[in-house]
Length: 56
Image (cartoon, rainbow, N blue to C red):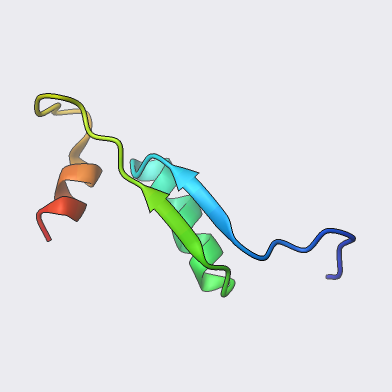
């Protein structure tokens, strides 16, 4: 599909479940993605994805 303003690159703020999924979809479409990981000051049991990315 051609659009008037094609997406050439993207940035996703937050690497939680939703942010990681959005970044993955953009990457699958061959769009360069900057994924910014925002971590809380202390570990948060509700934020496992960011910690998993940093510890991999």
